[in-house]
Image (cartoon, rainbow, N blue to C red):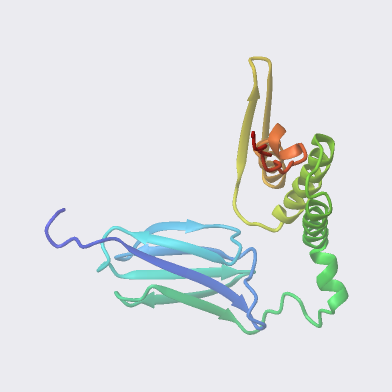
Length: 203
C-alpha cells in the first residue's frame, strides 16, 4: 500500500422528507479532494460511497426537484442524512392508501401463510400435494419479492434446448419453484413401526 494511504472508507448517504421517508428520485453526487468522484441519479433515497483513502475530504451534493444541498463530511464520518422539511411524499396517507401501495406484499404473505398451513395439514403429502404447496409458496415469494430493492437474476437450463431466465420477482418464483427438491419416496410413503420379534421356547 502506498505511503500515506489508509484503509478504504465507506459512507452511507440518505435523503429523507419531512416525515422521515426516503425520497425516491433524489440525485446524489460526491467530490473527493475537490474533484468529481462519482454519483447516482434517480436513487431510492440512498447511496453508498466507497473511498480508497479514508483521509480524503468528501463533499456530498444532493439535488431533488431543483433544490440542492451540500455537505462536507469529516474524515471519521460514516453516514449522513439530508433532510428536505418542505417535501412530503405521502401527505395525509390513510391505511387504505398504504395497503393499496403494498398489495403484492400482502398477497405474498397470504400465500406463504397458506403454504405453511397446507404443509401442516398434509403432514405426509403425496407428490401432487407437494407440488401444489410448492406452487403456492413460489407465488407468495414472487409477490413478496416485488418489494425487495436491487436486482436478482436466475438462469436455469433443461438440457440443451430449454432454458429459463428471469429477473426480479420472477427470479424469486423460479428459485423457489425449481430449486426446492422433490420429496423422496421414503418421505411421501407412510411410516410403519416395526413389531417386536416373537420368541418361542422349545422344550
